[in-house]
Length: 336
Picture 1 (cartoon, rainbow, N blue to C red):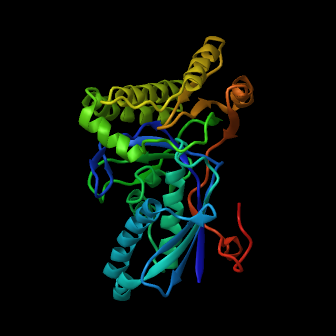
Picture 2: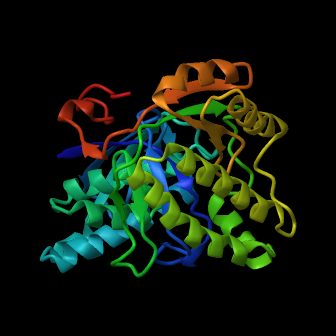
């Protein structure tokens, strides 16, 4: 049997940067994001008769690091299955085939969609019926932001204990995100390592956590009020504060490139001309412009000379796909 699932990346409005617990992947503060309807990850999982897990990543054998991160999530799942009356599950191993449409390791949340898809596919392959909150907690163990990619639309990821730290949907004003991809290169310093360095060396880290804890409820309230302007202001502020903390590390870490700052400046210029648009950027050089549906095409056109532009609306929840979507040869057509 093979199970295939699809999940989409999410872009944080209120950023996640820093962990309270490395083992459980608990965030130092909660966050808010929108799941995109572009750049999906499709992942197929099938039980094997071997004593190890294997993984094919974008058509090639996974690196040791990539496989180790997947195994970490699978070990949690094996433990859950054992606790739910499947003692033999501790010896179950799987083959994984996964394909990312987003630039990998370039700040476009490919790890979020990747681990969300893996959590959904692997849980179903193990015969476990997990709730959305349980799937979110499982995905979190692979990559923190993956907790949010289980959820469609706008997602609130709670900080707290293992049981408390999951994402859930919240109502929000209609938005569009214009991704401006300026580089597909894998970043030299991973988000996980950069978070450690920021927490250990940035003089702004404590202030970053404190202000995020203050901004998050304000952003949730803006969502409830349908206040796009306030939400956009908070989103841009969150991104700039996160990058300020990162750049203040010792040694400094620079994810944003000169063209990234041009795109951020463009958002301000467009606002001066009456267009409601705000900029955000995760840990990479690529920038996302947030606007309302009415102005999405105009904003995309304004940014088209600065990078490869794509418009996204709110994306769906992570879900199991039909058997024909399998990425394993001979089991069905490849699903892009």
